Image (cartoon, rainbow, N blue to C red; front, side):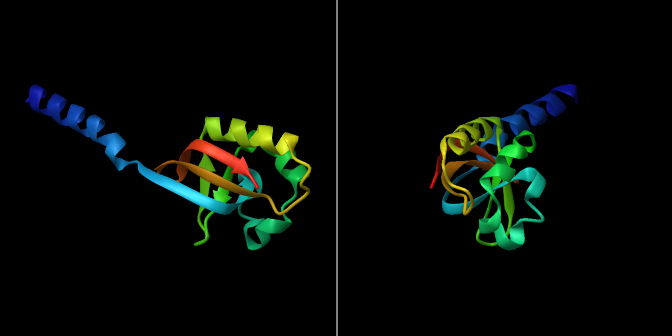
Length: 113
């Protein structure tokens, strides 16, 4: 019985990568996690200074259907560097791609527009 349970666990763990879906978003609104709910109504008004001030909460995008997808640690680090280097004040948009795991995007590339 233990062997059967062990095999099922191994099969389940092996299937986890199959649950990830490749995702690509163009011109998506960038928000920090702290402001994601209150700024969703007018995401383009969310400012760079606020996004930098709330950097510890992490970042993500608002999809066209209104869902918020959080970035993984790599994505947070990359977008923070892009925000620091940018002169934009608001209307923060990104092109981002990666693997979607539930509501988290494991970012493979992100570019601030």
